Image 1 (cartoon, rainbow, N blue to C red):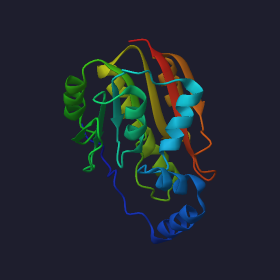
Image 2: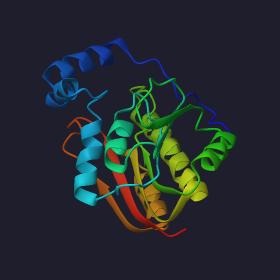
Image 3: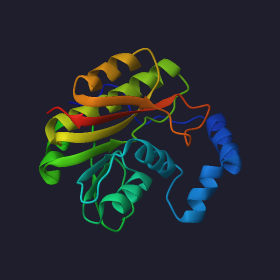
Image 4: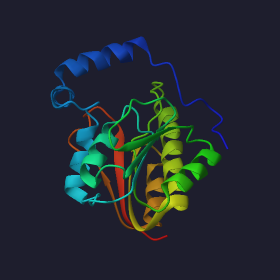
Length: 212
């Protein structure tokens, strides 16, 4: 099954200019550059992990929508080499100790193949987001769909007791999705890490103790 609207949209020139201006002032952006990470998003996952204890050494981790790869960079530091699988629609540069695949996560066949490759998974993480259209309701709907795909992957691959971290834009269906996650995990929390931009509508949902 594929979504009936495109996930990739043309980002407006104004938005790009605003983001460039923000980067020039963004401490996390410069910190990621200085420390050799691919994007500032690494600090969101790091802050989530430090607060909610998502990873253990030796865990098998699947990073959905992983490009450019900073979440996988953090995950492999926490769980060890050859325990992280990353997948994205776009081609990614290699990360030492991470198995990288290219595929469309809106395709059920891709999700099923990935579950076979990964085997029993301890942690599923997803920082997936659609390109911003500027239409708040549309962006929320597309973000919700991607979060639902990540939750569906938990259904086919996450082992009982496993953990889940997923990004979703806030909107009218946010609470319903949160309740869906609560029905499948023993502990669930919606959280906005300090590294998230103040202007962003993004929220991270952390689920621990998958019920299976």
